[in-house]
Length: 237
Image (cartoon, rainbow, N blue to C red; front, side, top):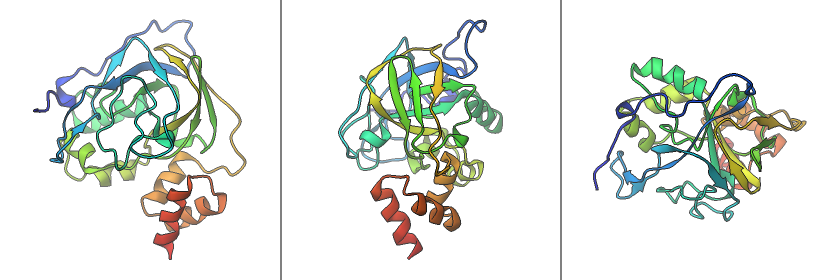
């Protein structure tokens, strides 16, 4: 099965919405995967290319990688590193897609970074790990950072993508599903109180990507799942 598209083949505007009377923090597009061959050469399909839907229904999958996505009708190809409760739903800001669109010099559609939720009015780098998120009829929770991989770089046809994405340090956010529900374009996004530890998604991402000072802070806060903390402990030791 050959890859059917690249981000360049799709327009940047995948969902339109009436701008008046809509909240500033809201869902612009909800997306599920169009499975295709892994562009990084792995012998599997990938779900990195996600396409707009009228709505998505989210739920809490099993706890482990390989337990599937938390979005009905979505697809996870790399079951060794994706799926499960801590990576149930992936959100990314349209503002960040616009930044990368400018950097790459070509259109980048909502969903093209593998985002189930394309948002507007939210800086996901500044949300706090463990912060609750209400959207549509669902209740979500800020979970763990995304880490760039070979599939991601190959999909975008960019050499040095891991370095560029890490330098930008705005990885979007994986979200747990606390209460199942339906999410639609235009839905308001409301955040609960930030946990006292104050570790942001940017902090957690940079800790995972090699910043030892931030890794110590994340370990002290114990705000990531245990297997993430164990990885940081091993690196620091």
